[in-house]
Length: 304
Image (cartoon, rainbow, N blue to C red; front, side, top):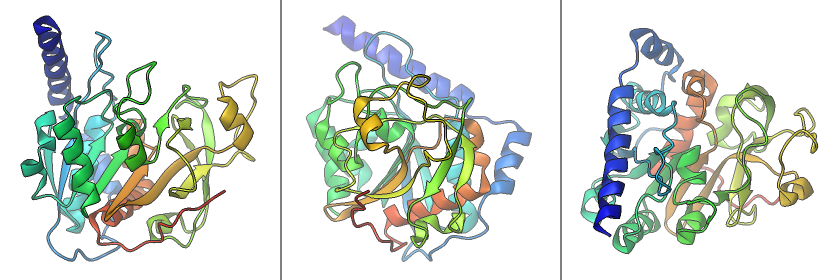
């Protein structure tokens, strides 16, 4: 047991070291993101807001934690977006102790930027996260931060309550990768979180998840999804789950209430270039402001 605990600690330290060494972008990369940042927030904050951004990656199989290359780009974009628009101030943490109730208390929302793996098995920390959101705060996640967090392959339901809060786990690999061009459908053009798209769908290269339970359109409000009429949907070429072949449902962003709190999830964020896309950044800011409680939006379930 002591050996396993030491091994887990080493993996955590390795992930923290990766984040620390990768966090410094080049001046050109920063400038590219700076130029793409929204000029202003879609909603005026009701009060000064604080966002806790968590970077923790764990892999219990003994391999190096799956740390996405996009993490430092997302970190920089999210922090600078809050600064420039005045929507929120960002505080970074790379340790799971950040989920303690007393640590979370001063924050209005927590953001999982491409976290991966079973972050903790401590029931107190798990309940602290759920309670934080349930009592009226916000949860934001990008890409793996919702879909592949608290997941240990091949066992998917490591923390089913987390899946219920977020809206679902991924299961079954990626039918489209960053080498493929997919087309995105704007499902609710009138929703303020989608205002940046002006009702227009768009092509993009990004990795796509397939979701399993607790994913259900009866429980959340889908904002964006893959437009299969314009995207390659060849079952012989791509690995689709039987359920996804049947319903042809590949959501890319959603919002949902969680008791008294709010959840914004975006499946975008695998590719570093995502965080220098001005239209996506504008939508990310709107989603974050929804989770913070400053942007009112229709979050009623949207059955397909």
